[in-house]
Length: 108
Image (tube, rainbow, N blue to C red; front, side, top):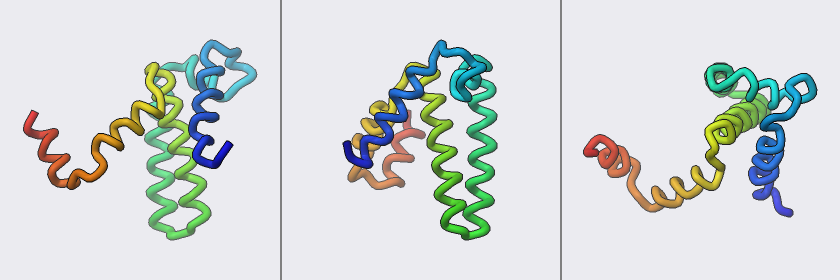
């Protein structure tokens, strides 16, 4: 396995925690609390990443980025989506100007 496989392995772990005992798994506890708890964590982790970036400490930026990615992936799993869904969207956007892509969203 390569480092790129880490997202697939994380996704497998997240899926395995659906329906698991919330007393034995942070992820299972997060899932049991429902989407509002997951969304709250995404908000918290986003704010922590912003603060880390403002401080300019590389290690903190990486740490908080990992926390945010984990919680976004937890939300995807909760919503029966996968990291492949996100990767497919990124592939769709690849080679498209960010301005053109944004304009295409407002035109719909």
